[in-house]
Image 1 (cartoon, rainbow, N blue to C red):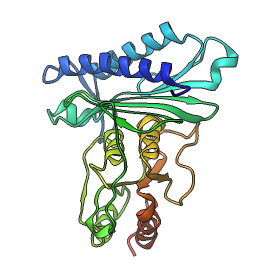
Image 2 (image 1 turned 180 degrees about the vertical axis):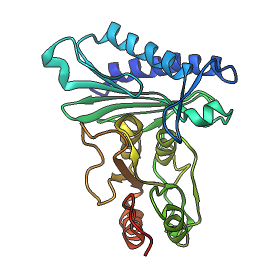
Image 3 (image 1 turned 90 degrees about the vertical axis):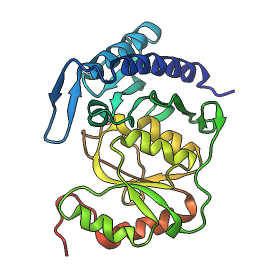
Image 4 (image 1 turned 90 degrees about the horizontal axis):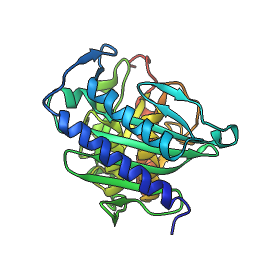
Length: 273
C-alpha cells in the first residue's frame, strides 16, 4: 500500500465531486470572462475550485493550497506548509466553453518540494488517472504504462511550440514523427502519455504548476521520462505562471525527441532561422 493512499483516495473523491459540477454546467455556462487574449474563465471554474478548496480545508486544514483562479492559500500550521495541494479546477476551459469535450480536473499534492499524489479526472468520459510517488500510474483502477512503440516515426505527439515561428518549428519536428495533435488541455494530454494514448508530449513554456503537478507525476509513474526542454527536472515549486516547459516520452525515444527540439529551437520569442 502507498504511503499516500489516504491522500490519493481523498483527491480522487474530490475530483469526482468537482467533475459533477463541471458536467452539470456543460452547455449551460452562466458567465464567461476573458483572462487573456487566448484564455477565458467561467463561473464553473470558480465553483469547481471553491468546492475543492473547501474540501481540502475541511479534511487537511494545515495544508497549503495553490489554485489557478485564487492563487496561494497558506496552511493552517507552519510545519504543515511543506504540503501544498496544487489545483486546476477546469483545465481546458476554452474547449469547455465551446462545447468541445476535452477538459479535466487536476489535483496534485506536493510534499517537501516534490509531487507525491496526482489525480486527473476527465469528467466527460469518466476517466480517472491516478498516481502516487511510490506506486504505479492507473487509469480507472487499472495499471497503465507508457507507449512501447520502438520508432519515433510512429509517434503521435501532443505538441505546442509557442512563440514566434512556433508552427514552422512544429512542422519541422513533425517530419520525424507520425503526426502532432494540439488538444487544448495540457493536463489531460500529459495524462494521456501515461496510458499511451499519446506517445509523447512537448510544450516549450506557457504552462503553470497546476497544469503539470498531477499529470507530470502520473506520466512519470507510468514509466515515461519527464523533463524540461533542457532535459532537467520538470518540477520546481515556486515557478511563475506560464513559464513551465515539459517533454514527456518513453525513455527509449526521449533523448531523440530532445535532440529534434534542439535542432529547430523552441525558446519563446526566438526568430525563425
